[in-house]
Length: 266
Length: 284
Image (cartoon, rainbow over all chains, first blue to last red; front, side, top):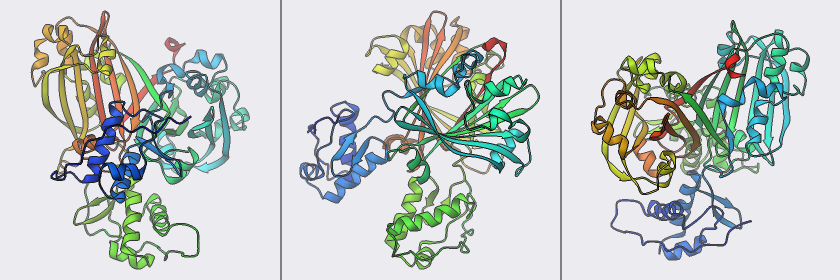
């Protein structure tokens, strides 16, 4: 599955430049990647080869490779080599926030995550992490309009698409709503919103806020992220006409998703 | 971010490195500091104990302490300030400004003379500063060409801007760079709307000028991805390691085709996105 080692023509280091040598080496390799002389899957020349080609110290080459790794441009396989990777995977899951929440999907028994996975024809599965009553964390309390420390029900899961974990999710519900299927390990077809509406609540809108940050070591492990891959930190709150009924949070692998929005100009 | 140089927290419970366990010393030091930071100590914006203090507390070398701090920096938890110390970042979980695309592109804002960005900023008590640093003709790269449905290499007009933000609640703070924003227009559009070449396009921004000339916008398609910045972007945006960026590409459409391709790189510690998604009857 790995491409062969490529030996692209690399420029010489400019010893008179103010730019540190390791950055010049990283620039040269990045340039090859951007010009597609090195493609995703290709193996970079070995440390020894690069050290010789650039006529520098091995430590300098290592710093250059560490920089490209922190940028998410390459991944290291111990004992095998350093490979070019896509910053965002070519077959990233397409998430269309204005489409995935439509009621007709719920009527077909499709949860929003299934709609996302359909963009790549991938099966979805989940690891149940926790079903519990917990004190509401500050950002959840604020969105649900309750005091911090108010007891709420949480369902924490790790979601997989195909063979990769893609999100760490937590769905928080006020206790009066956390009954029946909403308290069960499997919420059933159509997801949480479908169950909420079956209880007679009519959802009017959802507010979705997102930011991007580096993962904690734990998140990095659970999502099996490479170095230099950020996570999307997302909070989604579902409302009826008079109150917030659910606050959903997700930590999403930054290189496995593409978000697409269509917005009217009116 | 405001830094309090006298806020070093020397009461953190830190224990000497355990040399009997199978985990690198610098990672053990990073683990201890991280646990405190995540629990709110030192509080965001405050300073960690000095390197000297840390090496005593961990009973470790300066090199080990420095490597531990570098790990936390790469994770975006701390930020060194030259000559002062290492601070817990305050801006890591709360962006300065949420872009609210489905409100900001409403015609009412353009008619009121508000550009999309200013409509967001005003509501969230944020000040915006924009510099147009280049206006000129370039050849469309493959991505821009695909957005505008033209051949790669076709000439287009580009407006390159650098956008900085400041919380209105702390006017003593300097503006901080937040976004690289390049707008590309097909030459036919540039000729029809000469004001697109002006540094200041006037009330309501470029979209208002397009509509003045009869190019009535129907919708926008946005594509959003997430990644680490390259060296040049990090330098332009003045962000250090541990701060990812949001890539946003937007195509503005009229009834008869695309009129603008907007390519933007946003600093992850300044910007977030907020969407209000209706679930009512019209969405069935």
